[in-house]
Amino acid sequence: MPLTGKSITFIGAGSMAEPIWGGLIQQQTVKPEQIYIMNRSNAAHLAAMRDTYGVHAAFTPEEKESFIRQADIVILAMKPKDVRQAFGEFNGFLKPSQLLVSLVAGLSLNTLSLLVPQGMPVVRAMPNTPSSIGLGATGLCFSPEATESQQNMALSLFRAIGEAYPISEEQMNILTGISGSGPAYAYYFMESMIAAGIKGGLSPELAKELTVQTVLGAASMVKLTGEEPAELRRKVTSPNGTTQAAIEEFQRRDLSGTVEAGIVRCVTRAAEIGEGLSQEVRQSL
Image (cartoon, rainbow, N blue to C red; front, side):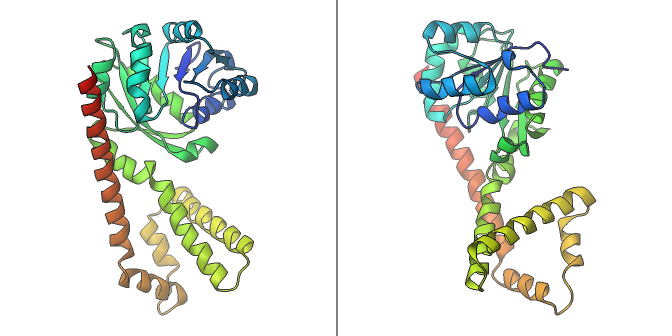
């Protein structure tokens, strides 16, 4: 196993980090004692995570330094606005023999290379929120310094919480538009289905249950049958039937074009955030 005996330190212990170490422990990919966690300020939350999972938690600057220095893998799990402060505090503790995994949205490999010791291998990852229930989709790209063994370690991290896909960094923004932000699109469509059900006379509870089961079933059909969504759609769209009437209305209102435009805007915004973060980091050096 790629992660056997490896110590993993999380800088950041919030909603990005917990699903990963929780999944690693639940899947028995690592043991709790291999996990070391720290955060910026919330000691009560940190203590709760320690007690819940049996992981190590750092409460003092000395403990934080020790956790980072002894790590085989260091995972950055913080918001972009906290990056400069974190590296200002911890950069002196990193070394080229470690593997750095960044979950920071928009932080490019090139920018990361300016922040870490020369020659340190870096992984950039974009998980999504279903990772918290083991159904995540994560894209990963690697700096040239990352060996095959280190790439496999990174992939093992995210396969404990769903599926993991090696991609080029040029594909990271479009991946963000599809899988990173994608769950919100599904929720938004589900909101509309639920609202229509309620307006049509269903109770809110039943409208929600029917919508959830329908979306779950449809996604499972695509995954389990291996058929294309378009083919499955055609199979349930009888000529002049109810489904065809709905699809024609969606087409009349250009639902497909609207979805594509939303994804394009998401991709553009991801690039804007990345460029802004890069400039901010470079100005601070």
